[in-house]
Image (cartoon, rainbow, N blue to C red; front, side, top):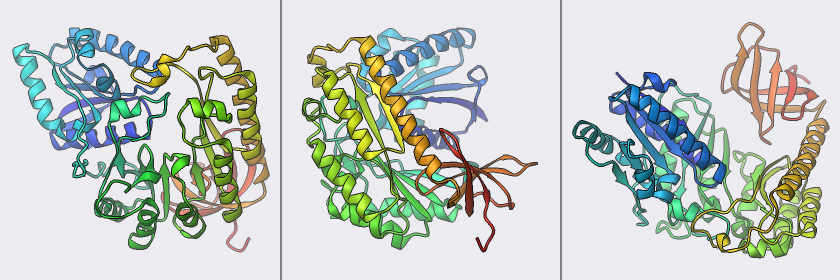
Amino acid sequence: MKKAYLKTYGCQMNEQDTRQMETLLGQSGYARTNDPLDADFALINTCAVREKAVHKIYSDLGRMRLIRENNPNLLVGVAGCVVEQEKEALVKRFPFVDLLFGPDHIRHLPEMLGKAEERRDKQGPSVLHVGFDARKDFQFVNVLPNPDESPVKAFVNIQKGCDNICSFCIVPFVRGREVSRPAHEILAEIKALTERGVKEVMLLGQNVNSYGFKSNDGVSFAELLERIATQTNLSRLRFTSSHPKDVKDDLIDQYANNPVLAPHFHLPVQAGSDAVLKAMRRQYSRDDYLRIIDSLKARVPGIAFSTDIIVGFPGESDADFRQTLSLMEVVRYDLVYSFAYSPRPYTSAIKLADDVPLEVKKARLAELQALSDEHTLAIHESVVGQIKEVLVETCDDSDTLVYKGRTGCNKVVHFTGTPCAFGDRVRVIIKQANPHSLFGETACPNS
């Protein structure tokens, strides 16, 4: 078989795109390799959300140029959001690349690869496929992951694109407008995955709780969660990502009543100041957000929250930043993904003065992350001595039987004790709290 090297930057959506491309390449006679020097086809799947990631991708392509010079038969491809961002400019900057395509064109990878092979043989122009398909009948990639992947967890796409135009976010410009995948396709994929032994599924979309807003089958996101619980044999269900403006009572009801839905909610707040939220075009206030949190805490005791926060957005004062810290004190997130603002092409915020000095951004980010770490450790310490149900994902050491899994609240747990198998749901007594994980032992049946 030919060999394909794939490297991924970005979010879970990009990771899922790479899995789908790996499956399509496997159907075309390619086996995956982790060594680009050993590859017949090298593909970089890109992310444009952060400027730093784009710089890393350009560095990778510089290294790929050297590999190509030593192996003229190597095909080089670039996929994903940076291709949509740069288009022909990327071709001009890296003319040795054979194939470039955006996220909407993944399902055509085998045909595009054939054209790229012709391009290499004839020294023709790079194959470039960009642009979006916003039709309601957009054809999602309906392939299952390779059978040798983990049988425990899987991602499932439920929508593509985003209709929110947050002033800092490039996603609508590199992934297009929102389209929801038909519910029957989603259910069929989850059923097929559970037949393979998958126990946990993560539903993916740029704004999953707006699922179905523009579809014709009338299935809302809350109804989709209910159907998954009642019509499949899935053990645990998660989703990402959500927009607070679209969180309604029916979704909160699902958290309270759906036994499959894990008690963990990733709900990006981005900032704790109303002035900054307005400048970000987030379409909710600080109080709106906290009402959602309060309602979920009341309905689902012990629910875990994670979030995304940007520091140093244009115009953010020290008082604005302090409001973000105070919101963190109120919510007490289990985990915070935090970033310093960087201007992105096409976004409306790029027209604003990037007036928060870099050193101030770094200082605010460090202070925020220190507070986040403090909260996370305190939450971990609060569960020491408790028994938690853990879904077993890996075995770290077959000799000592050290296992790793996650609780419903998305806590990583390393544990020892009674032998178990991947995919088992095991009762573990928590013995030790670490900053980023927990350690425990399997509990006795009667404990």
